[in-house]
Image 1 (cartoon, helix red, strand yellow):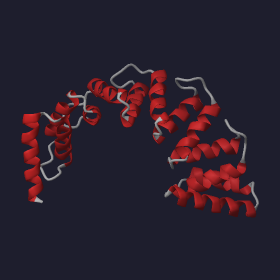
Image 2: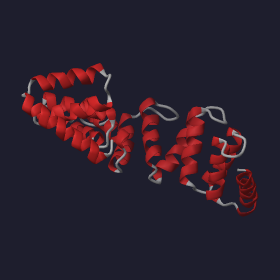
Image 3: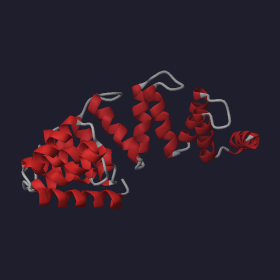
Image 4: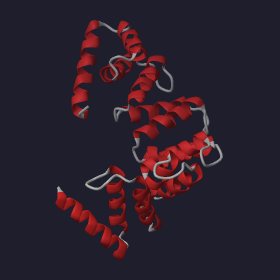
Amino acid sequence: MKWFGKVINRFMHKCSVNESANDQFYLGLCSFHGWEIEQNYKEALMWFDKAACQGHVEAQFHIGMCYREGIGVDQNYIFAFWWLRKAAEKGHIDAQYSVAMCYFYGKGVTLDYKKAANWLRKGAEQGDAKAQFALGGYYDYGMGVDQNYVEAAIWYQRAAEQGYLEALLNICICFNEGKGVAKDIEKAYFWSSLASTKMECDPLILSYHEDCGRQLTSVQRSRIAQDARDYLVQKGW
């Protein structure tokens, strides 16, 4: 793969001459991961910074994460938030979630649950499962939004439909307890079947699964178990 190293060198020259943001970002990734060149976080940060200053959204996200984690640079939550927000404002889903977490923990910005919820909603509406689950939790506990069990169940289910593990458990609980939805033991057993498949050793989900099962007949359990297996195949989980 020596030829690849030569390609990287040509890229470096091209970037220094033509100032291509995409190539600068790519070189940053090469330096960050050590792809055919020596891994060098500081050099990766330099390339990310060049691309980010030209408005490259992935570079903005990456440099924000470098500042957040202290990779190739001294950890600085203020700089991290500044760059992450720039990427988030352009619709970058992971950046939107990260900005929400900055507000949630008060990292680089004043703690603000309402703003955290607003940023989570942006990602959730784009289909980000982790944001959907987190937003469900905000509605569940009334953090930054008015407490609303119906909204909580809606967002838990959307995340669960993408296979998000914790959401599978939470939507099971919602149907088992009639929290935000009409109580439905069959649906609770369905979601707990999926959760137990993905979280085989989790004592909490196994407890809910067994509890729901005790409230159903063997015929119902068999039918729902088959529905769950079909669903797993359909989703490719």
